[in-house]
Length: 115
Length: 115
Image (cartoon, rainbow over all chains, first blue to last red):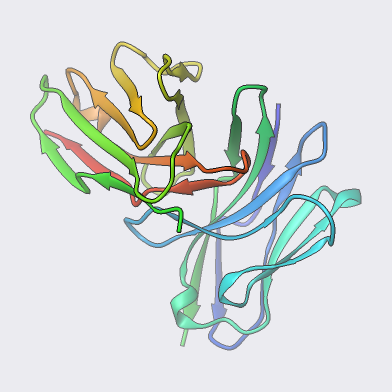
């Protein structure tokens, strides 16, 4: 079965500083990987996704992520964080079960941005 | 495009009553919808997968008689929490698939409080 580990529960960065959120996955085949962001009391918004091809993927709001198969990682990065980026970030791996796809989420990383 | 709505956004009900949550795909036909549950400051846990016109597939440990799911059309799935108890209080989020089976679009969530 697939699994996702987000080792950092809570990260605090200063506005304008760079950001990297870690994500490691376990999956027996080629993974389909996603990063979602959730603001308090809200649903999930897709930041970016990796299906195949270029291992560096660009997303919305200036985020990018790099798929590294050798490290089973899909870390999320942003060169300069804005105060509005404060939220919960979830990494997820998708698996096709034959009848439908399923997403397995990590436990999330809460990002706090200080001014 | 690919907008998913949920109704209601918040609901408070008394213990022992039932409550229905609707999930709608507004601008696409969703052959598959998913229902997740999220406890405070925790990740999303998949409850069930709902395919239009067929019975839902529940994840292990989810009581199908308590959480009734109906996917009557290509744009609507409903989750009914029957005989609700305070421990059912949670944030319920639905998602839907459009086209590419690995990309789920999420609704804004429904906050259920059982008193």
